[in-house]
Amino acid sequence: MRRACEGCNGALVLEAARANGDIVSARKGNAWYTLTAQGRSAHAGVEPEKGRNAILEIAHQALQLASINGWREGISINAGSISGGTAPNVVPEAAMARLDLRFLRTEDRLATEARWHELLKKHYIAEVETTLMLEPDPRNPMTLTSASQKIAATAKDIVATLGLSLHDTTTGGANRDTLLRMFMELKKQKEPNETEIQATELELIAFTLASLVLRKNNVDLQWLIRRFQEMHDIIREAPIYQEILREGREEGIEEGREASIHILLMSTQALFPSLVTLLQKQITSIKDLKTLEELASKILSAKTVDEARAYIVGGQEKKFDA
Image 1: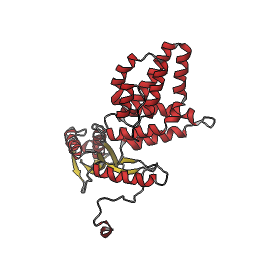
Image 2: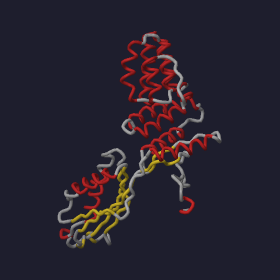
Image 3: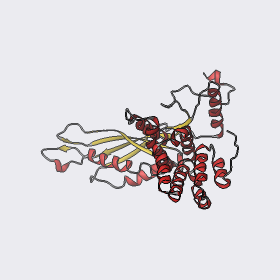
Image 4: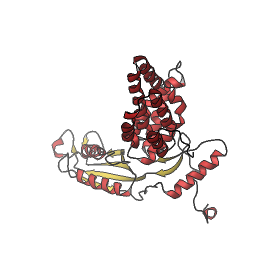
C-alpha cells in the first residue's frame, strides 16, 4: 500500500462511509482519559464510618465532568466505562472511570482538560483522592482543508459520471450524524396511509430547527442546505406550506401576504440564515402577493448564498452556474 501511494497527492480510504452513503472529508479528534479514585476500605456492616467510598466519588465526578458536554462547538463527552470495589459488603477502596472526548480543535481539548482539573478540586466524599490521566495516542482532528475539498470534489465528479450523487460529511460524533438519525426516525414515523408529501411536513419543521442549531458551523450548515434543496419540489407541496398559502388566500390579500412572508422567512432561515435580516428589510416594499410567492420559490431553488441574495435584492430572474 505504501508503494502504491508513492507520488500521490491524496487518497480515498476504502473505509465504510456513513449510513446514507456520504464520504468522510473531515473528522473530529478524540482522546481517552482515565479517572481514578482512591478511598479507604472498611467492612460495610461492622464499621462503615471508617470507609471512604471510592465508587460514590467516581460516580459524582463522572457526572461533573460530563456536565460540560457541548460547552464548545464540537465538544462531546462520554463516560464509557466504570469499575471498582470487591464485594457488596465492603466499602470500595478504589474505582476507575474512562471517558471519551471528541473535539474539532486541539485547543478545545486542552481547554476542556483544564476545566476538568478545576472541577475535580471539588470533592464529594471526604479524603478520597482523584486523578485524571490522558491515555496514550490521542487523535488530532482531521480538518476540512482546501486540499481535502478538492479530493472530495473529484470523487463527486467520478460518481456523477455514473448518474449518481455523492456528498461529503464530517464524522466523529458530529451534528450531522444526529440530524441524519432524526430525519430517518421521522421517515419511520410515516403513517401507512400517508403520502410522501404529507410526511414531509415534519421534515420541513425539522430542517428549520436544524438550521438554528448549525448556524455557527458553516460547513455543516452548507451540508444541511444541500439536503434541503434535494427535497425542494416535495417541500413546496408539503401540507404546512400549502395550508399557509390557502388560509392566506381565503382570509384576504393582506393575510395572504403575511402568510407568504412567513414562508419566505422560514425558508430563508432554513437555507440561508445570514440573509434573513436583509430579507426582512426588502419584503416591506413588496406589496404584490404573487411576487412574494415567486420569491419564495426562487429562494427554495437557489444553490448559493449569492444567488439567493440576488433574488432578494433584485427580485429579477438571473442565471447562475450550477
